[in-house]
Length: 347
Figure: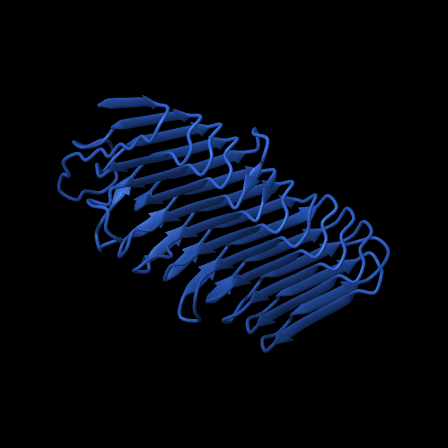
């Protein structure tokens, strides 16, 4: 089924299809393979919303251009517009939102899936750029698997804007969050933030990547995998990057739970100054690596890294001089290694 709406004023579409009995994600089923498309141009306070409760293979697309204060909302298999409920489940869904030349635009995507894809692109094609723009993505299947999902968000030319990505972080914690990927990119931003969260009783083989190519200052990146020592987190990786004249920026990464084989990689460079990096791996971590790197005109930068428990963990900190602080803490465990280099070639 395909429905398409073209509008130059407020446009809202809600598609509600019949929901079949709960089944494993083995292929298309009745109520799936639905497509919904909304296109809006030149809107002021435009609104676009899509709801697809079918179980399998749904596609939702919203495009808003040359507007101001536009809002785009997508959700798949929520059964209603209420918050998440147990056993609400979908698979192989695709959600995409594109907002170009919008000031103060808002985009939100919610899915309850495995093998789902969410993508938000917000670009500065207008005279005022992106101001107070937000992109929010949530995937969570309570009491079920939240696996093989992908979230991506891109913002360019933004000021005071936010990206928030969440997998398994909703009303009810998912039992398994594994093989998921989160990617967020902000270019030319000032006073903006990227927040990434993954959580489950078991959180394995997940990846997080956040990048800020800043021409401005006071930007933040926060990445978290796991929520407590009772969780199990292994073979996860978090990579954070800030460069291009960044000033006064902060990076924070945390992996918790009974964890092993996890990687935290943080980089700041190209004119970096007054920047701070924080990394923490806790809950009996083993065979994990924390790598922090600052270079290219560093000044007064700070690095803090900690690992708790476990065996054979490593912390590597490199700074290319200029009044910096490096602090590495390893508590408990055995066979752990810390290396710090505040000048010369990095590790």
